[in-house]
Length: 295
Image (cartoon, rainbow, N blue to C red; front, side, top):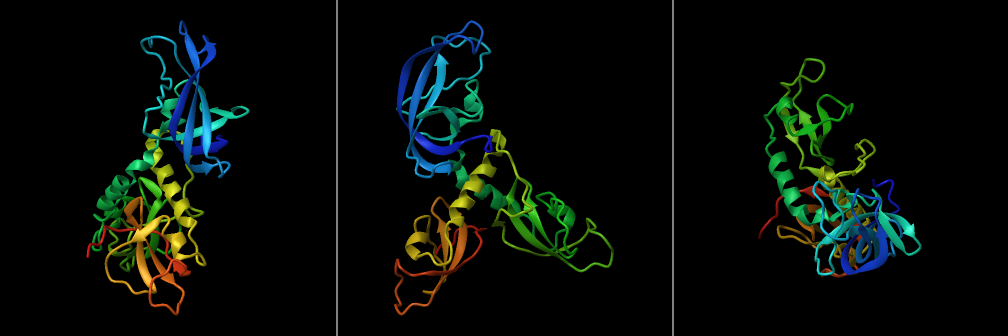
């Protein structure tokens, strides 16, 4: 669905207008009215990045909804939800759901899943921190998978079973046997971190059961925009400071949308001892997951 869409946006309903248009072919014995809904766009995930509003063309039942009928959209201008929209051009100036007009709310037009990002990451941390040094490879495989990676038997990167963009690096205690016995003991395990690499499985994002993959991919793309050479002001558009020990040159920052997603940032040397918006980023770590630190 992601690949088939010309435009993917997150937006809020601002206007809903019935059209002088009817359709009687989409469901036996039913009549449908054409509708246009205007969305204010807050984020463009695919397509023209300057898009600020989109008009969605869809249909609703003219009267009562028959039993066992498919779902059709019923948007209202008073709806305050953020919607995730997968769209294709319908005609000049407006779009239609990429999956078609029947049951679009099941996939192409749905409430944005990223609002529960903090809960998602909290659940990840609770599960991943259950794996500790001294446990076995068999224990590890209850939460992580190697996804067929080939590497040294004593050190390997593993993917979280529920999302391939969350990974840990695991070192096993030296063993004499060949292969990778289930009884191998974990020597060290890194903090879980976020990355999409060449070995990450690619998903089509075509149903709600994998909304979290798409949500976390969006987060990664947002974070990846911050690069060395940019300024502290750029960084603070999506991150904020966290407590704990820090120096003027090095500091940990947390994602505004989720305080459990963090990066460590090193700033270029400056004559000023104060933190300034113009400070230049020298290094930024890959994003990692960790509970909040409170002073």
